[in-house]
Amino acid sequence: WNLLEQSAGPALQEAHASGMKVLIKEAVANGRLTSRNTSPHFQNKLKLLERTAHDLNTTVDAVALAAVLAQPYVDIVLSGASTVEQLESNVNSLSVSLPSESLQSLQQSLVQNPHTYWKERSALSWN
Image 1: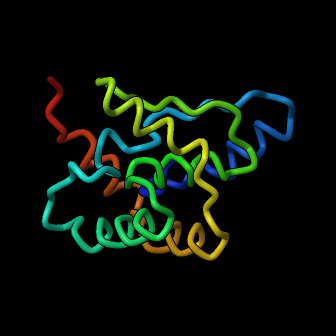
Image 2 (image 1 turned 180 degrees about the horizontal axis):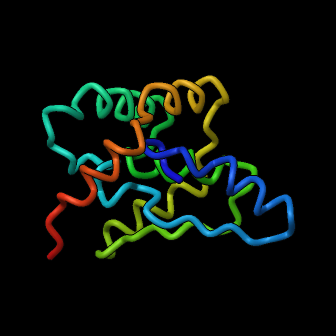
């Protein structure tokens, strides 16, 4: 589950409700929910993330992670950080309190069709 691909939410809620621990991977969508995403198709969504981050005095990645942490069924979130700088920025998400209106706006504005999300993800180059 992340702000772009939310379709697993109901299944994760059900798993959590049945007593399972829910671990979220790809919370920043392989970097697509960070300021490093320069895709022209993502710029309007990035502006919303940047505005929200500015309002909360934090970073875009911290907002994306805070949105995941705000889900009531989430027990563990993997940041995916690969540098100390990314890890330090990601840790800031623990102190971000997303107002419910902001969370709802992000969820509604950033969500993609799952087919589109996975098609884009499969086209990512892996280093």
